[in-house]
Figure 1 (cartoon, rainbow, N blue to C red):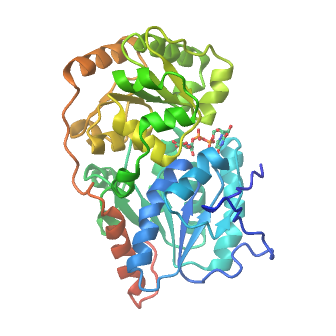
Figure 2: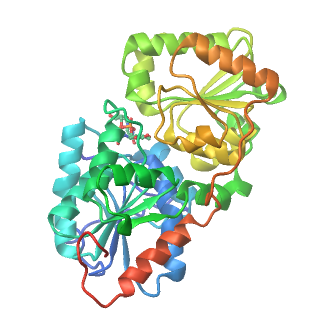
Length: 411
Ligand code: UD1
């Protein structure tokens, strides 16, 4: 279980702190805000909040805790470096495991951090196991929880993330939302209006902040030793990602999707960075073979590489939550290989189309997009690069209040 992260700084030095005390929060400020990250999509969400808190925090002490749910150079280091994230103050080094083991381990390791740091609030983002685990520890110790990306619902309780979203929102005091419909979802679950703040989308803060540094596709393909760089960039390509358990854990479903990708490669080249979960599943499956155009399989890529691959694509095929939003912000057509989405604004206003994992639906939507250039979208309200500032403003205003924190109303 202990896959302790080895964070590198930009010079390649290992900068993971060596604990000199059994107290995981030794030397950390007391009474501040504990900000939690755990998995890849959390890093992009937390980076702009940390930046905003630093620039307008007026001395609000902030401690960054990394649970270590994702680890290693592909899934973690590249993101911390490229996003300019500070090295975490505390790294719980939890690593992989079943849902129960991973969640329990995060909780057990986070509890002494809370005991020692006595934070005024715990800030969690997104919907991964680390989000729920840390929120649950905090609420049971009467520490207010603030949840960024609250109120998103797929209504599909077979998704681990939907369970994480529902439960985290129920035990949070502050709910920061990315789209207006999220408030209705929260209200319907009995959550009071006072703690709900529509702030916009922190993923898009990160996208706008780093857009001009996106790494061009040709450079990424060359870096990973892909032979057909010219053929891929000249024709234009589809970017493919998938890692949802519902798509990759069942061999029959995965086989069908791989067959669909083979057929898609009759239309255009594919670039497919493969998530570790998917790689394990692919090892037991038949790798897709290119029909007319190449299929470039890459390892998981960093944030700036992913941004370049998305920006340069003719279309994106994905089951990621974040990429549905990023393609909407970039105006790139997106086919979501799921039957539902917790981010309906990307369909109502953005460039996203739900295809599920049905081969004909995916290929029809692909053909239609390639023929027409795809669905025109617009940028949703408050996806403007300033969501982190709005969150920091709320947190700092509440922090500045003299009254002691009262649960369910404020921090
Ligand atoms: C997790 C999130 C998912 C998010 C995704 C982004 C949950 C329930 N799921 O899914 O919402 O979209 O991250 O990546 O929290 N592995 C590695 N290296 C790593 C991490 C994982 O090799 O750094 C492998 C391990 O074999 C592990 C498997 O990937 O068992 C799954 O990892 P896990 O964190 O459990 O879930 P993800 O599928 O990554």
